[in-house]
Length: 94
Image (cartoon, rainbow, N blue to C red):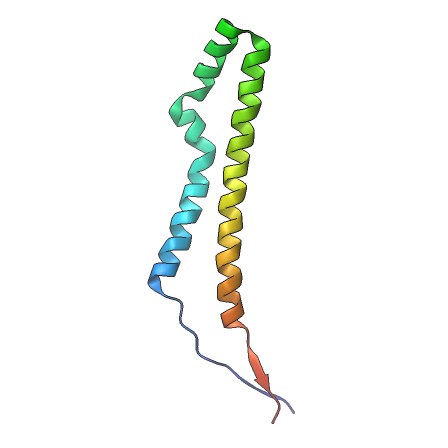
């Protein structure tokens, strides 16, 4: 019969707050374009400079936003992997 011994571990409040803040920033990245009014700016740019320029700017903005969200998610995963490494159960056979 195997018995498992669990080690105690501690996750600081600061780490929890940091992950929460990073996640909050990630959630705010999607609606930030609407809050900043980028759609009206892009439409005006298309009117003034032409559709091709406006489309290029739109694609660039979308790419920047997607990369930012991906970077945020990667940072959360990185932190959680470090915490997960500390949480792994250590087992000892008796």
